[in-house]
Length: 168
Image (cartoon, rainbow, N blue to C red; front, side, top):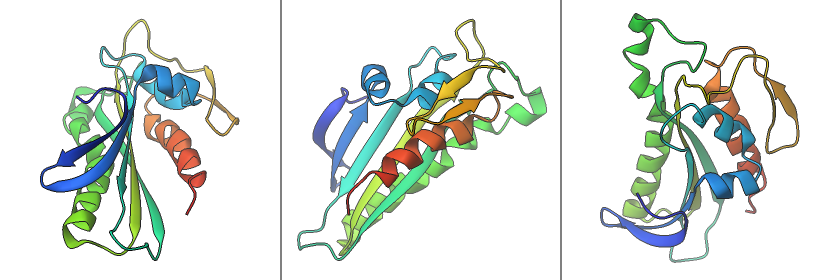
């Protein structure tokens, strides 16, 4: 995994700017919902920002946001076994955003595209967030957690607010 920070990397043969926010940057940036969802996992959450810019001045700037819950056990509101079998698929939103940016680069789309991926695991542990916790989202709004299996809404709350702050 790339070190947190801003770097240019090659994604296959596509040149995309990549910024990886690790736990310290997430805390500093107010991504408290992302951090809460990921705190039950042995793997710290990450938010990845991908940037495609065309060679010519872009006609538009589009921001895409994808939820990347790499595994969703439901946190402390644990899913039953049959409903957990496909929870590795809870990352498809982030995968689609990644594929879209690669396609934009490959086809040299005339628009600037930013992709934001929220990468977390929603796992139970002694460090997991709990029903009844009150979280302050990046927007400053507070959210009371009633069920820890509603992690997608929490991750998207922080990511969508960040996306809304991006300049065209």
